[in-house]
Image (cartoon, rainbow, N blue to C red; front, side, top):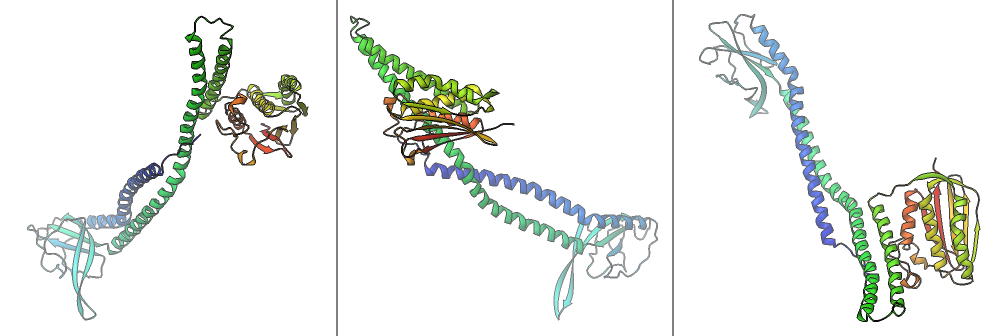
Length: 415
């Protein structure tokens, strides 16, 4: 049966959608962090300057007006202005504006000669305009040089922006790589689901078609007795039983897909459970002229009794189905420090080595051995694996040389 595969074009489209959403999330985070960073940097770098200029403003309230030359090397400068906003004569410097400019940070440009040429230098000042009680100079404006803070602030913001751009570029590559890893299990599970639905539909169609055909044969000639149509009825009942088992198995696997299988754990004697399970199979094996041997030791284990019983039924039924008269079936129970091992060995027709990893797939049948003539639907070993997995164990199939198959079940000793 052809397996369903999702097109590469759809996978690429979903990957690009994932990358786009991921990058939008990164951009939103970076924008928020950027605003917080700029706000925090401004408060941190200008905090000392703001406190200093406030102290200078409080001093002016108690000082008298005195015209003095401002030393351009000083960090602080105080300039006085009249009622019209013009600077009082004798306080202005060549690069200080002659009118009041009320801003948090003033950028003042100064023309200086450097290496024989004229160059404009920018100075940054934190300013504060205060009212004085002097008639000739009712206003005073404090200039506090913050070139150092301004340069450091810009350096921090520049480094942050470089980091943001670098991280954003890396996030594009990381998002694309992560999308590949993220979407791979999703695609795998979706393909399994689609194949499961397709295979289940195919398996259900066959018994339903047979039942419909047999019932139509009965209805075409209503004069036939029950004895005359007994063969058609027997075939229909057989297919109904097969259909019932198939739907039951599908329900188990559907619950496993939804993680709805609950285990009723209890401490039981595994040795005793195996003996009880193989008792009816021994009689069947004797009728079919097959050798049936069990060896084990008393081992107590905390498991779901009904689920382990179902697991054993699947393995034993599988062994009986695919062995011929004269073949042998051996069941061994061994105990180790942290786990137990249940082995079901047969000398039957065996499984091809290339198919050993596939026998636990749903609806898988090997061409020669796994066919509908045996009455199986290819779900038994899948259910067995589900049971073992929910017990945190592992199951594997191996070749039993010179012929036959070995199924090994490892179950941990839960504390």
